[in-house]
Length: 113
Length: 235
Image 1: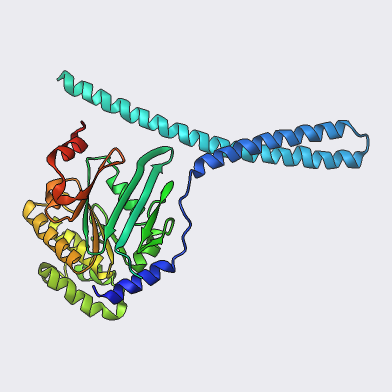
Image 2 (image 1 turned 120 degrees about the horizontal axis):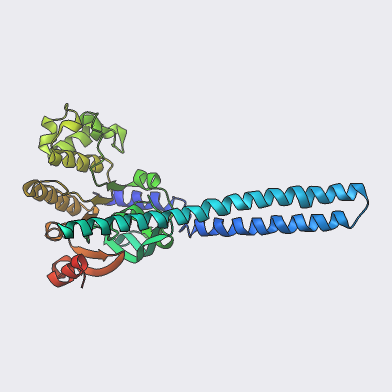
């Protein structure tokens, strides 16, 4: 391999775009799900208070739209994210536990022979 | 400017979901050097290779190639510029002819004839078998084909995962002779191997992994049996 190839390689590597280490995306999405759920419930409560605090039908509709509907959407999306990532984590630990138990069982059977 | 280090993993940690399998791993491969990555099953050797070739993104730490931080660059982009990985199980196309397997990996399409000649000069048996389906080759010949295909990409970094798996000792010795020749031509080689003695004979440096931690880094000939046994069998 000649030096020209190494220089070409270095040039091409330098031209690549990097995006860095990924961090724990799963943890972040789990936290985002929790936050969205809380925000949704808070919005719904605020909407409810606003609706109860006015007799103006237009203000009540606006409060229902922001508090009720937006809050509901946020809570549903948040709950979906939370379930997806908390269940994913739980299932992985569960699978590892099953594998571990299965191996221990195999070892016991072999030892018993 | 070319620095001496071609491939470097700096304090890399990697995980599968919530389970961290590599902890603060640092590996350095210099130009034309053969580095053996050793360790028992489940030590994290293949995961290290996955991080080094861009298939897996670390959760912390960084990957440097030719002194550039390339953490997060996808494997296909790295492969295109000359980072070649030969996976465990060879990764050839069994339903294609030997010749097709080689030329489809050619980096420079204009030089297909030259690449073929170079491959056949290195592995003469492949010339005899060039019109044979790759899946009908013996295990050793398939491994030669995967090496030839890797070299057709004109790599600067070559990573080999468990090259000797399922092969006869004579074939393995022949393959490692080729690995030495490849490194002498200036290619940096990172070899993952479970059978330590096989690779230590040709490697310049060794890294021993155990449970995702680096247990030894240093010259291959300074790696003693006790360190190896501790890594493989526990203290």
